[in-house]
Image (tube, rainbow, N blue to C red; front, side):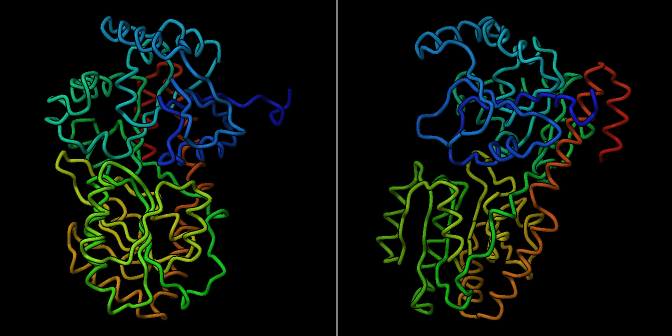
Length: 406
C-alpha cells in the first residue's frame, strides 16, 4: 500500500450535545481535517442544532432518554464508564481522543481512563475562568461540584494534554494549577474563503453588529447604553443584535427604555451571520468578566468579522490582546468602559477613510494569521505528536515534544 492510499488515522472528537449554534468551530475543525479522519462523538444530537451533514457522527449509549439518564446516573455514582459507550468507541479503533471543554472531559473522566487513548482537551474559556467557589457551591450542577479537584486530577494523567484557544486562556489555566508543560496554544481559526468582504462599499454601511449569547459575560448592555448616547450623532446608524439567552428580556427592556434604534434578530445560523457581516460597518464585542469569573476566551466572531473586512471593537481578554490589532484592525477597550465604546463607535461610523483602512487591514490580519487552514496544520501537528508520544506511553518523549512545541 502506497503512502498516498494509506488510511487516515482516526480522532474521536467529543462534545456531549451535538451541536449548538454557538459551537460552529467544532464542526468546522472536524470538517477541515486533512491527514486525520475526524469522527464526531456525543451523547445526543440536538434537534435544533447545527447541521452535521457530511460528518461522521456517533451517538453514544442508550437511545431512550429516560433509560440513558438513569444509566448515566448509576455510572456516575460508581465512577465507572458506560459499558455500551466504551464498547462503541473501542470498535472505532481510533488513535486519539479530542475533547472540547474541560467540563466535558471531567464529566467523562472514567471513560477516558478506560479507553487509554492519548487525549487532547481544548480549553475555551468558562471551563478555566470560572471561580472554584462557583463549582463547589453547585453552580454548575451536582455532577460538577468537584470540578476544580477533578480537573487537576485529570491534568496529572500522563496521556492528557491541554490546548488553549489563546495565550490568555493558557495563562488562566496555569493560574488554575495545570502545569505549564501540559498546555499548548492552538488557535481555532476561521475559514477565510467563506468569510469574505461583502459587495456593499464601506462608505454605504451604517449597521453596528453584535453577535453572541445573551449572557452576562457578553456585555451587551454596555453596547446598548453606548449606542443610545451616540445614535443622534450617527442618525443613519442601526444596532443589530444576534443571539438569544437568559438576559434577552432585560436587554430588550434596556433598549426600549433608552429608545435604542436596535433590532433583536435571535439566534441565526452561520450563513445568515455571514450575510449580516457583508453589510456591517463595525462589529462590537464588549465582553466582561462575569460575577462567577467567566470570561471570553478569544471570540470567534471577532475573527469572522475581520475576515469579512469589518472593523471590530472589543474588550475580550484574548481578543483584545491576540485577536485584533488595536488602532489598525479595530479598537480594544477596558471592560465596562461605555465612554470608550462610544468614542470608538463614533470614530468608525463617522470616518469613512478610517473604516475602509481598518477593514482592509482586518482582512489581511485574518488571512495571514488566523485562517483555518494554517490553524488546522498546527492542530494536526499536535495530533501527530501526542498520538505518537502517548500512544507508546512514553513520558520522556512526551516531555521532549511538549518542550519543542512551545
